[in-house]
Image (cartoon, rainbow, N blue to C red):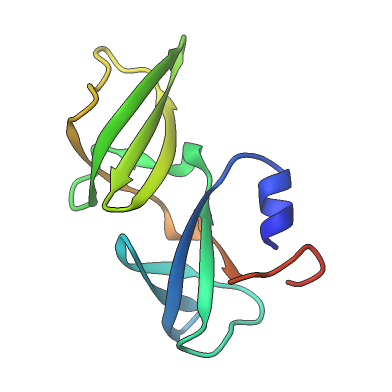
Length: 130
């Protein structure tokens, strides 16, 4: 559930509405557009409000065909860089290995992730709910 996901480490929480489920995959409409994820376990009915959780280290930057985002901030921590990214009203954090030249705030970047790395929760789930 969302409580456990936030307790076990940093995560980006993305609000959405479940559009459909087909063959172990769910399509969720979010502020980032439609996101397809791999699902396991019970799934609410289409139209249900849901949240997706994505860890910052699972975001791939400079992803061909990815979601366009703007870099708001970049912090350097030796071998890794932490980015604050924005798409409209939604902000995400990404943590990646440091490259030869850090990306600059204000730059546009395309991001993606493996659908299997996205966790799925009914909106408002508490620590006692799945």
